[in-house]
Length: 263
Image 1 (cartoon, one colour):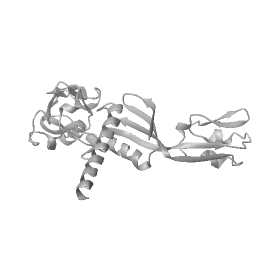
Image 2: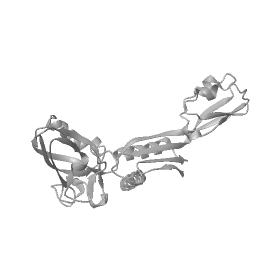
Image 3: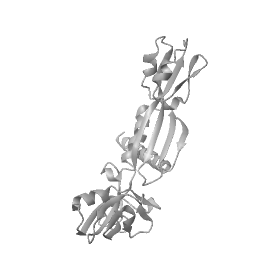
Image 4: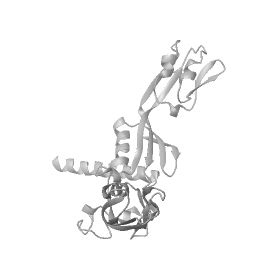
């Protein structure tokens, strides 16, 4: 397997995997979305809500606010905690939200008992409070995975595609392929078409359909994939992929051990 980093930002990573199967690339994608444990608001009690929104609507909004921890490994999933899931600072982070109108309540107004935990983004709107309206909520956040509920989904836009291979022979310079390409992968160099920025090719084959001379051959490289992963903000994209790989490795080792017991 060969790994080549193409793009790295705080919330996005893009890389090329070569010498792997589609199942492996898809495993990375699925693990980023559903297997990496992160924090999210789990349960709450609304003690006062005189806003225009129902309790259920506010609860749903709070549950979908991405939470970020300075050290995610300090917390355990409830079922793996020493307390057995009954609730302790190691698996349950208490929070409080208390606001009075007029004004807009933002995600930054959520205060957690652990100073190392906070909303990943400050300006997520929760509700507008009018004059004299109040909102008082207490509850806690827990660490779980995306397959339990979408609010624990660490990865958002996660996908992959085959690396394209474009061959151009006997080009007559009609420029039709360049004109129809939606991603500007093809350009004219003199009187011939030439590929540029091939990683952006979506394999739509509009160029091959437009080429009357049949000079373009577009095929996917079956063991090479461009993988794009975006984080919800709960953890950095680089860490998300690393943790996803660790989860896949742990599951593979567990399966290997169980198969060894049966043999």
